[in-house]
Length: 86
Image: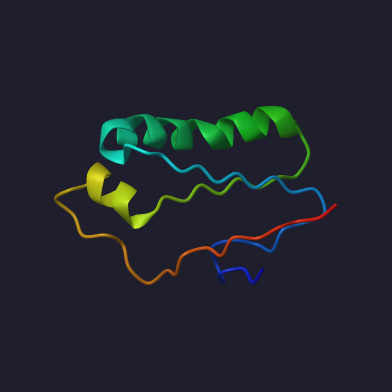
């Protein structure tokens, strides 16, 4: 997997990547955003004083539902799916 410069570092030896797909995005968008907002705090609690990173990404449809009056941020490509063996 090639990281998108300035956005995501390449996966390390101990990496957890979770991808969620939702069937009814318009219905659950705000819950998805809330979970995304809570994830860095949860990662920090788990990591304690260890160095860690938390990256949350939303697809373009989520941005449209969250901010219908603003255009979707451009300039970034979609993250590639990856399989990490370990």
